[in-house]
Image (tube, rainbow, N blue to C red; front, side, top):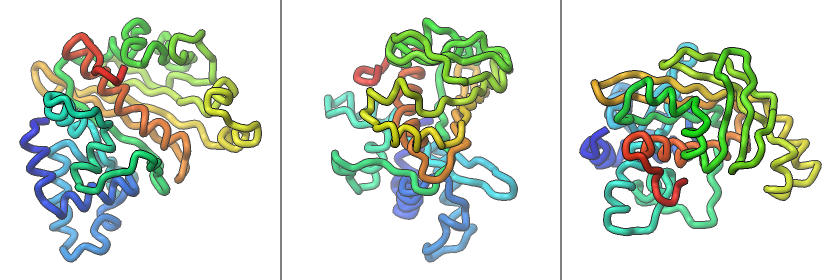
Length: 275
């Protein structure tokens, strides 16, 4: 997405309000977003269309309703292009958004998702579908943008997906490949919280048992050619319960990982400070 489209979208206070609403609670419907605004649903729809065109919002249809999700990728790109260029401190995608909306987040603030049940992220990458598929499924490539770890599988439907964290030996956390349609679509189940993570985060046995009651989620990668030299990658991580701690965790982790993936495919290097 061009920077101009992002800046134009952010210039309107109503659109900034809509982004702020999605930041506070992602996945809202049109009716929920229009509530409290002194304008028609049609007017709100037009504002959402501008945000979608800029790539700042992604709509996912569930049944008869469209649920709108905040997409931090364009703001991360703007931050990389402009903030880094002038040697300002690195800010992550969600903090970039809050600053753009003139509502800074204190350094001690924690991101919460009280009613969201899915994370959606859209990125446009200068590459081919085949190269992106290779990047999503080749261990040597995955380790470069997953901070030395990440998933490993033969990527056949039903096969296990083993997981490594920061170069440690792979763990079998009962993850499996759900869909594999190269180079268009890949989906697999995500792990719940595991005993190996307990010491890392300092959880008590009771806390770990509570976290492991959350349902197993799934992550889906959809690859679409949009230009001769560019593809659209849509990552949907769903299946969470409202208030899920796993959702809060992956929503903080995926933007950096996917930013590294984009940078690696386009430049051969990960983004400084994100890899």
